[in-house]
Each structure stands twice: as structure tokens, then as C-alpha cells.
Image (cartoon, rainbow, N blue to C red; front, side, top):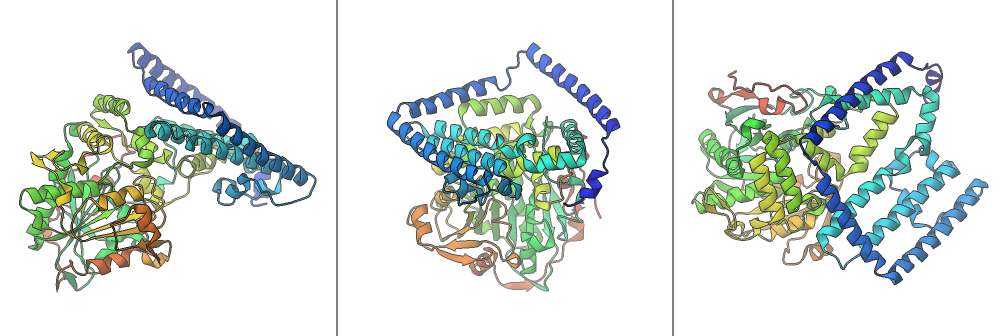
Length: 612
């Protein structure tokens, strides 16, 4: 066994144990004091939300009990599968191996939680695993069969049931995970001591009560390991820095690109490393690329609203690009929330007679029509938004880690429980991973802006109704957005469901191309051609529903990036000499201080423009 000799000589760390107990006592006392302080102030915390969730569960399970015939059929199906499971497990314990016909067996093959061979080779642990998979599938299936209840309630119960089912997996407990038992015996329990130390480090790190570390955040240096494409900050305001990238080709296309990233994370997801950087890909293919880098707001930004993000974001950026390049028409790209803002900006510019600034619009995993919010809809109702607003108003902003933890819950097995096992039970340090480093580098949300976004987009879906939204007194009507549009969504997206983004593609006018890439919200977008991974589906007919569109679509292997280049040929303009960056405009070197001021640093860093 790997490193077995080393583990056998490992001694119990008595001194480390005493240190951990001391730290744990101090932390527990502090948490108790915080709790008593909240109670003295009459702060009920999340108790109202908890009661609402209990009410939702009672509604759904009441509906299940109201249909005894369906419940009886479910019980019979479960007992049949359970009998197969018990029979197979009994034979395994006798040394006789047969294929397991139960549903649990079908699920286990792709479940990364049980990839260790001991889950198959040891009859007892195989039984635990298969029983868990069968039970969890039965519970979730029965909830999803309930139709005579409002969709919002059903969605919430389904989501939190999956959270519970994921939490009670036998892989998450020392006594029922053979790999953890083996590691604990080999290290004489020191893995648990190291794990407890890692847990205390996470608890004491702040600003969140607990944010599980998915990656080694010390392994990356901004501008050296990630966000490495050469560029400079050429403009700055209270909310944004505008980055212009150096050309890498002797000639460039006349029309530049402006990328509007989401403000809930930092822009460099599109510039992680040279071999997977979409920004570098555009630069190397002859585009002059500009990117908005959003500030990480604090209490000083509490009053900034969605209109400020509109004007100080894409509207001012487009004007600056014209000043720098002399070109008015720009190819615009919005990612996730950035795409929603881009749709608003395009409509706004149309109404103020400046629509010609947009040559084309690309929406990457972006919602315009919010009628299918996916799992995010679980957190969107009047009561929960009011609770968000209460929390935000206390500080003037919503902690970025709060939103990060929410997004991690959407993929709890990959982004929560796998790290809990690795860090706290195996006692290992998280491994370096650039994408997870970016994922942990979330930003705060200004109270006024975030409240507006949640209410007007997610809760009331006003963006699809002409004139329902007014920004700077201008009515917003995305149906008048007639410039060519390219929508790329991802099939496994859990944040912006692809069929929801498809609805948005049908809301705008003009020449629209919709592309469906493989994988999820990040990996499906950040998928360079050299990787030769995944696929993208195409179908020029958007007259059908999303399901019909997919049925008639054509599968193309590899990355969607070359497809975008082919589509954009009509809109990139003529070839001109490469544009050198005006040194007089340079304020900072990319990625800029709005990015390098890391959320996990508790101190407030000064972020001032520097001339180089």
C-alpha cells in the first residue's frame, strides 16, 4: 500500500492534539458569545426560513400520502430492488459474485464518491453503498412524481432533499468509509488531528463562518500563474477598471471586442492560463480585446445600484474604446450576469440613439428570460429576498463568501463534501487547481444593486416585458435588440439552465445563432480547441421549443471557440495595423488592483491608480 511504511512509523501527535483542543475551546466560547449576543438583540436569524422549509416539506409529503396507490407501487418497487440487493450482498459475503440488477448498481458506475475499489471489493461496504444509492434514488424519485403542487414548493423540497441525501452518504463518515478507516489506522489517528487543524484554520480565517477550501490558494500568484495575458488598465471608475490587451499579431481586425464578465466573480476565469485563456485566444486570432474588471465592493458601495453598473460598466467602456481606437462599433461579449447586463445596455443604447456602438452581441451562459432559473430559484421568493436585504443592509453589502457557499451547494458533492473528506478526514491539504482558485475568489454584492437584480430579474422576470424596466429613465425592451447575436450555453449548466437561456435567444431580434456546448457553466465555456474535449450542438432553426431544437441539432466534436470565429467573420471588420497601447493612458498592469485586492484578505487595501 502506498506510503504504508511511512505511516506505520508515524506517532500520535500529542502536542498537536493539546494545541487543537485549546484552539477549539477558544473558538467554541467565541461562537457561544456571538449566539448569546444575537439572542439578546432579538435576532431570529434564519428561523423563519427554516419554518417555511418545514412547511414546504409537509406539503409535498402530504401529497405523497394522499395517493396511496402510487405510494404502494413505490413501496413494491423498492422492496423488489431491496430483495435483489440483499440477495446479491449475501452471495458476495459467501464469495459468490453476480451482477446486481438493482437501480443502485446502475448509479454507482459514474459516482465519484465511490471510486475507491474497496467499495466494490468489500461485501459489507458494497452493501452500504448500494443500499444508500437505492434509498436516495427512491426518495428523490417520489418527490419528483408529485405534480399537484406549486412548482416553487416542489423545487425547494427537491433541492434540500438532495442536500440531505448528499450529506448522509456513507462516504462522508469515518465509520462507513473504508478508505478513511484505512487511512486512520495507518496514521494512528493523526489524519484526524490534521483534519481538525484544517477545520479550525477555515473557521478562524473569515470572513465567512466556514468556507471549505477547495484548493491551495497559496499556490497561485496573480499575473504569474493565472491572469497572465499581457495587458494594461487604461481607465478606472468607482466600479470598474477597463483592461486593454497587447496585440500578438502584426495586424488586427478593425472592430475590437469588449467582454462584460459577471460581477459575482472576477473576470480572469477567461484568462486562467495561456493554454485555456479565451482572452488570449481572441488576441492571438487578431482581435483588440478589452475586458471590464469589476471592483470588490464594500460598505462604501452600498448605494450603488443596477443603473450605476450599467453606466460605469459597459456604457462608459464603449465610449473609452472609441476614444482609444477611433472605432465606434464593437463586438460585445457578456458572460453569465454580464450577459444580462449586456442585453440591458444594448437596449439602453438603442433608446438613446447610440445603438450603433454594438456590432454584435455574444451571450455566454446568460439569462435574459428568467422563467427557468433552475436551482437558483430555490433561493428566490419574497421571504428569502427580504432576508437577504436584511443581511445586506447590516453591512451595506452581501459577503461574497455567502454567495460562493450558495453556488457550492448547487454542486455539493464536488465542491463541498469531497473537500470535507480530503481536508478534514484525510487530513490532507487541498491540491492546487486554477479553476477552483478562481471559484473561491468571489466578490461582495452592493446591497442596493443586488436587491434590484434579485427582485427585477429572478423574482419578477421584468426583462422580458417591454418597458417594465426603466434604467436612467429609459424603458428597456430587449425585443428591439436587432444586432446579430451569438448565444452559447452549456448542457449541464446548473446556474443558467440551457433551455432557459434558449428562451432568451428567442426574445431578441435580428440574426441569432444558438449553440449548445457540452459540460457545465464553466468547463463548457472555458474549453480551448487544443483540449479536444466535449462537443457543441448547432441548429439554425430557432422556431421550435428548446427540446425540439435539440432533437434536430447536429453534434460537433470539440470546442465552440472556432465556431464563434467563423460566425464573427462578418462583423470583425477589415484588417488594420496592430494597435499599440497608449502609455499615457496606462494606470496599472493587468490584472489590476481591482482583482489583486483578494476577498480573503480581511484588511481593506488601498486601490489607487499608478502610472508606469
